[in-house]
Length: 71
Image 1 (cartoon, one colour):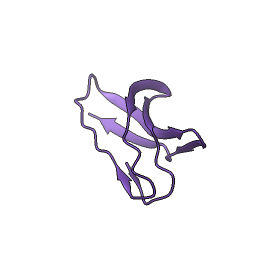
Image 2 (spheres, one colour):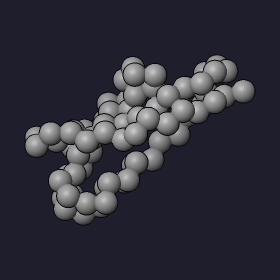
Image 3 (cartoon, rainbow, N blue to C red):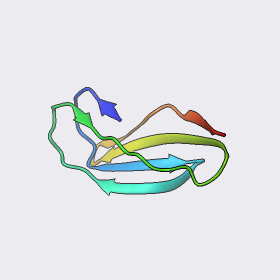
Image 4 (tube, rainbow, N blue to C red):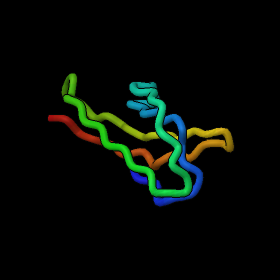
């Protein structure tokens, strides 16, 4: 996740197939760039859809959804 600047998110939410799999507090270092990386292992074969959302007192911003195929 990379947000170039502006009002940083104070909470990061990661969705897998529209279900929350991570809810994490994040340091507000506004207006500086905000980045976060995550890694995990696939649980099974299939196609999984991921997106994240950044939240703060002013609102939220969401990423586009990406699909990952696990063979």
